[in-house]
Image (tube, rainbow over the protein chains, first blue to last red):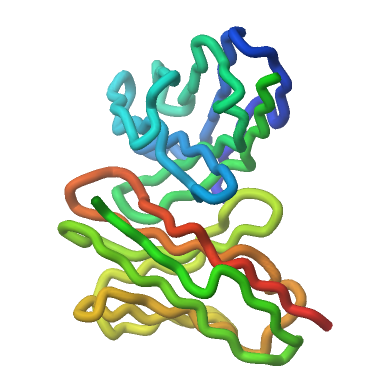
Length: 111
Length: 111
């Protein structure tokens, strides 16, 4: 398996609180991605990064921000969590614009 | 807008059966089509296809892409209970970074 870890693995928070999810890779891959997975919608891209400090929005970026200050770390922040952001969040990495490898996921519940 | 449609949505078979999962797509500037297997955790990469008519095989799993008719199939022969999972199809275009996923086919293999 690709060396990808996500933390925390589970989190319960309240509406209006900020939340940061971390993705850490040991593969030195250039590209990193954040997806969310919801029943009936499948996996949808939130944000991605194509290098240190280089990020851009995906399909469902509203309410989320990201940062990548080091090759190995990609942070996803929910500035003010809402119940609609209850989801499973997956980080993925790729060396080129080809196959992506997924981390174990973070289950986030916003009450 | 890119679109990926998988069929059937769910399938129940007996151990030893052969199954065929379908994925049709519409994407501008197609680059590749990928198959993933998802058990109750992160998606794991199975195949990537970029050229039409070429079959990719790994053990009992195989996949083929038809770029003219815009679809792919994933075959699993001699199914086992360990094949029970959701199978995800995704497409990648030359004009973006995201993988666009279908909603998946849920396969249950009964003993």
